[in-house]
Length: 177
Image (cartoon, rainbow, N blue to C red; front, side, top):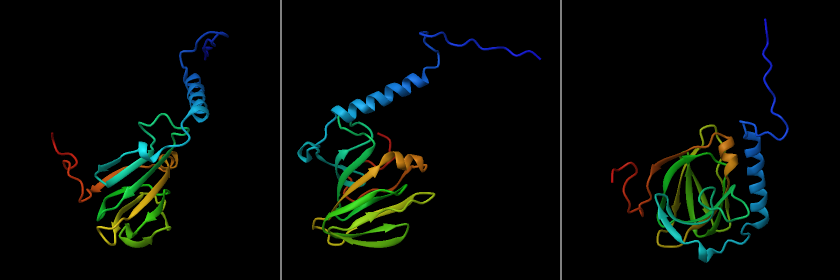
């Protein structure tokens, strides 16, 4: 049996598989971002936007935000008017209640909360289905989410939308244009 020896890359020669070089570049970009990225994210620069889940003010996001010192964290405020939409994703994120009182239904179980409480969505094999409610619609009920996104992906994170917020005026998900 003959074995064929693969030619090794000569010193100074560019290897066809530059995966390691790409990894080095990504790490260098992350280090540069940490050194030079925005450290203070101004609330007035983050507009309130309505989406299928409700009224959201984003501060950090893992996609589409490239000027902050970190890109791995997601941070936003959710203003719950009557109730949010409903969805399922991996837990492990923290929701700190800023104002008001309400409850969150997690996999069919109601959890009451009020100002200064911390809601910790559970880590479960299939994630957790949840929806948030304002106990007194017409009053302020807001919480701020802190979510380390790589943690969710490492646990097989996925996002499944189940129900729109009653405030959503856009087209239903999957509707043709």
